[in-house]
Image (cartoon, one colour):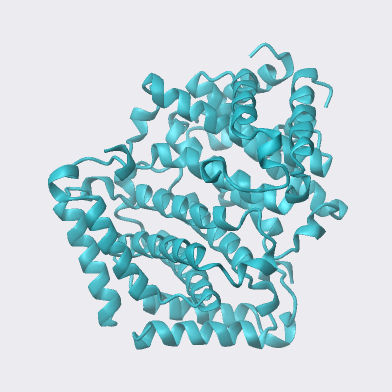
Length: 117
Length: 117
Length: 117
Length: 117
């Protein structure tokens, strides 16, 4: 991961865990659970709200939602660190796969999954 | 988000959605569901595996898991774009909050939540 | 759990796991992950669909969704069995708690969480 | 759903929602999000705990976990009500499918998914 800012965050999170002797809890299995819990905390903000009303959030709600996104990113970076995954490079590869799976002329305006075409 | 690589990915994902006329589906509500689904696909790889066995994955499994991490990042960036959240800056802020919540001398070696101290 | 049908299902699921020597995998921790994965498979059916369109499902979709609900129930019963929880009795107790938390005259027509009132 | 106790709970939950004018929020889409959130609250209890330590929970923890299971069941029953699904009958059908998918002599002691055999 050559990106210096993302890499810096990852190293800071590693140090944060190390300082607290929390590395013992941070198996990929446990981290995947924690990430899933954070993803649900995000979900919770939107569960009873109509789709259209989730684009523009009130300031206090926007702040809370931003921190949920940060929490997800934190566990994502911890997982990348523990599993030695280059997140930016892998994401570029995955986007390339998605371009093959979802050619514009085939999928335009449709929300079907690639396996349904 | 000043980081050029993360920003580039975010813009590429916006274009990907635009080209396919998928922006209509990408409300924050719907994206939060998609992110949660991807988080569970990660979880699925680890559900029956002992914690200790999730550090070192076989090559094929490692590849699959990496792409799940990328999928999570993809929806995370789409959410940041739709909600106008600076992911790196917000993450730094959240890490600062976590440092206050979890002072080393209080939490060392314990996995309790800050509200339980 | 006095209800004979629910109890029968729980015992049949226990036997199913025993016959396959799967009890070794069925710790509450692992089962909670499996349940969460099934909950996301349900979510996946609805992620790009407007709320209003999820009441009446086409027959094939209704069948698939029904089986996701069954999968969730299956892991729920496995968890109740492993943790010795009387599901029906506990649910009645929880409904009683919810009645106290959400008095009709206070919450009518609002979707706020009890801690927000 | 002929089971009288489960049916009674389902009807009581319907009345609970009706009394609070909450049926407007209870689309299958929204309920699937709520169920997923509850599944993650269960997950959260176990995320940093070793598998082996999740069989025997301390009394207070057992109580909390039981209520999470009840919450999951509550949203499961709301979904069955809104989608007109007979939960017990569908679960029996799904168990029958699982028996075909996972014949004892093929899967004994293995945690692979049926599509991997």
